[in-house]
Amino acid sequence: MSQVFSEETHRNLLARIPHCTGRELTDWMRTVEEGPCFLRFEEKVSWLRGEHDLAYGHAKAIIHEYDLRRAARRFG
Image (spheres, rainbow, N blue to C red):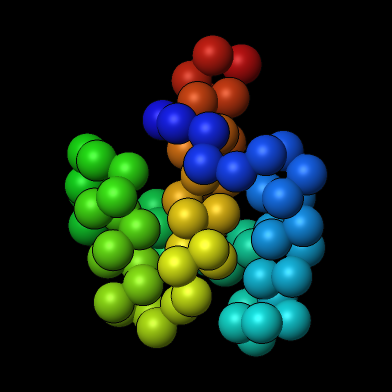
């Protein structure tokens, strides 16, 4: 997992996702969880963009947030 944006940019992108996509972030987390198992970050981003027609920045923010939450569950 890599930091793809500054923390502020990441939070701003996440806040805009519901407005820009019409779906809540929790819906996107579920979509990623139920999607195919890719190991590489960019593979996940490419899948999300291609499958759901998302902007590159939004897809990266969703995958990054998913990875952060998954890591927190593992170590929490």
